[in-house]
Image (cartoon, rainbow, N blue to C red; front, top):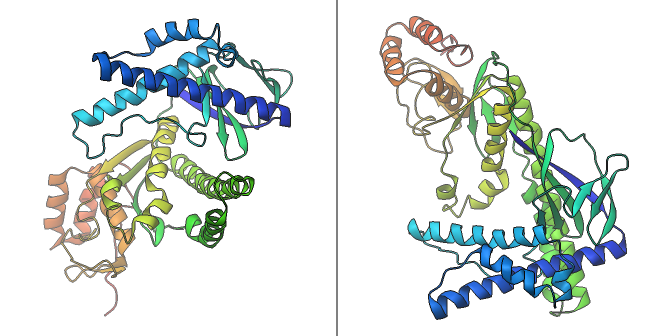
Amino acid sequence: MRRSYRFRLYPTKIQVRDLLVMLDSHRHLYNQCLATRSLAWKDYRLGINSIPLSSWFKTERNHNHWFAALNFSSAQATMRRLDKAFIAFFDRCKKRARRKGYPRFKGQDRFNSIEYPLHGDGIKLKDKTPKLYIQNIGLIRIKQHRKIQGTIKTVRVLREADQWYAVFSCDLGDVVVPKNTKPAVGIDMGLKSFLTTSDGEHVANPRFFKEAMPELRRAGRSLARKSKGSKHRHEAKRRLQRIHVRVRNQRGDFTHKLSKTIADRYGLVAVESLKIRNMLQNHRLARSISDAAWRQWLEQVRYKCEQTGAEFVEVDPRNTSQLCSRCGEKVPKELEERWHKCPHCGLVLDRDENAARNILLRARCSPHLVRAAARLARTEPANANEVLQFECNHVQAATPSFEKPPA
């Protein structure tokens, strides 16, 4: 199992200058390798990868003092990074994607990280003092807020706006995860509420980007008024970047804490298999969907469930809001209708909670069992619930007995 740790770096002004020089040298290496590969194919129809480029770099650094100051393993990682860009480009071509995305030359604001493929070769975390050693940079103060577990494999130095970070990728080995016997839950994602569980719990949607929109507009207009290439424009750009970084950090903090809570509380987590890229084609809801960060949260829940031994299941999202979670009959409703009112069995329930219960049923029960229980529910709804509860392991919240609401 692999796990990453990210710590904030606090370099001095001289170290920041040296880090920027090193980052720019890696960027020039990336662009020069891209130009070489493009010309080789254009003139000679010759496809080359990082292996011959590594030999070229070994001789090039003898008379290029900028390249000579780079760690060789780190430079090879930059060239392999270009390999990955071409592999992704060829995969998109095979899949006939609408946008092929040929690898592009990197500007100063588009190259923000340096990878060291081996801890101890050009970079090393000191044990006794909270400092990180980087070749040709020196010792940089690091905020190590938690203990690193496992063996450090790779280290990445990352720049975000005017802040620097170190990302450690560690190998934890074969981790034995105990069997999880906690209850199950179905989760319905939404925009009004970030999520609704089959237990009836609602988590509000924080909408961090929407709250920051006035500040982002002012920073964007300030940037547009500055002359290109001026010092004031550079400062305005950094100010705008810091706002975006703050919004992303707020969103990441929210999703990490919520996903940790869900993974620790339940033994089975059932969600909808959403095609979020297709949902973003709705231009009226695209900004709200992106602000909610559903995909980010789902990926975090997935790997945290693996760590806790919980089961993560994605189900077909079709008609989860339209079907009644008690009798199984279809009750059509528009998007603005927020309550589920079944005319067949009399169930009145929040629309999202009804969908969450249907999601949990689909995750734990076979389709023919759900259909059989739905037929039985038309005459004996209590017996139908007993059948589903007996067949679906530890699903108490999915099929509770509801009393018919008063007329």
